[in-house]
Amino acid sequence: MTEAIIRGLDFTGIDINPLAVLVCEAKAAIDAGADVNGAAKTVIHYLRTDIQETIDVEFNNRSKWFSDESAMHLSRVRRGIEQVADRAARKVLWTAFAETVRKSSNSRTSTYKLHIRKDDELVEGSRVASIFEDVLRQTLYRIEEYRKEHLAGRARKPKVRIICSDVRVAKLGKSAKQHDILVTSPPYGDNQTTIPYGQFSYLTLQWIPEIDLPAGWSSDHISNTHALDSSSLGGSKVGAMEKAETMKFTSPTFAAFVKTARNAGNTAAIQKVGCFTYDFLESLSQIRSQSSSSAHWILTTGNRTASGMRVPFDAICRDIVEFLGGKPIATLQRELPSKRMPSRNSVGEMITAEATLVAEFA
Ligand SMILES: C[S@@+](CC[C@H](N)C(=O)[O-])C[C@H]1O[C@@H](n2cnc3c(N)ncnc32)[C@H](O)[C@@H]1O
Image (cartoon, rainbow, N blue to C red; front, side, top):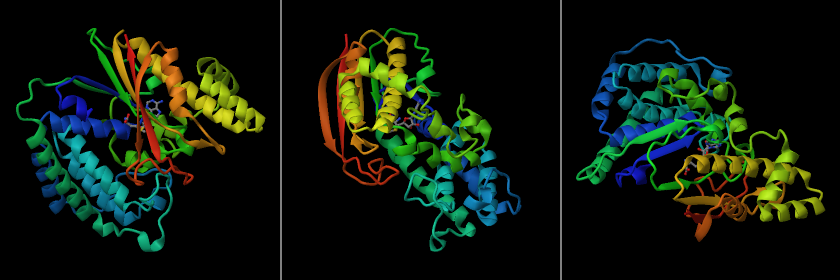
């Protein structure tokens, strides 16, 4: 999104995770000039005067993840942000709040899965306000830097649309027949056994008022810690063998993978990879059916291990693109520079390289 709008290009983005969408909405609000400094002053002023000791949010196991003291201080910050009248500016403040929730919860910050911290790593509730103020200060600094660098002299104000939906059913609602560029880094497998983005977002999403979550978000997705991951690509194993059959027909690479897995008696790998790649095929079909006839796609993929077998997702992705009528024109390989981001999955296995496929639809 950022790369599109700094070039003045219209942008449509889709994600099933309300937190991912909220972060984009906040970035779009920053780009569009929302008064975040004014909003920050309102909250800071409010925090100097609120001495209420209520806890405004309750959910299953709340006291496991937040002490009463932390929950009380987080409630004050939450009430402070609610004082801000401008919704766009509030979105930015919720991202600073989200980081505060993450830093002050009883869940470790080193893993995507919810995992209780050791006693000596617990954060005192009394630190919540100062954590928020620190994050907010950094946010304001970065907003100023961004605006200095990117807003002056821009030829055109781009239109930004962020859709909170399962991409398999998303309605892109495009009007003009333009050349489309699709850029995506899809998940590399089902969230449960790669990166559980849903679990990662669960606590934060409990704390942000529903009214400020993106339009289209589903309360079902935050009803328990696994719901969002189960609804994400590869999250359901229903009809696994039928899905694998369709994928064999779509992708010669997947068919070869099934043969090897069968010889090894590894049905779990066939089901897991069949479901995920089928869902991915559905996603790309859905996008293709609503996009302009002429388009470029840029897809970044990584090859994970599933049930002990390396999955050639880069080659399967290429097969899917060809199946949909696209012509691969380049592949760029890159070693992952850092171990911090999605390179490490929830079972500790590393993805150390990524492949980016560039394809053309004429
Ligand atoms: C590796 S991250 C990439 C994020 C970033 N939007 C990008 O494309 O570079 C994969 C994203 O796919 C999203 N996702 C997974 N299943 C989805 C689905 N069925 N519909 C829409 N988004 C989904 C996850 O929530 C996660 O944010």
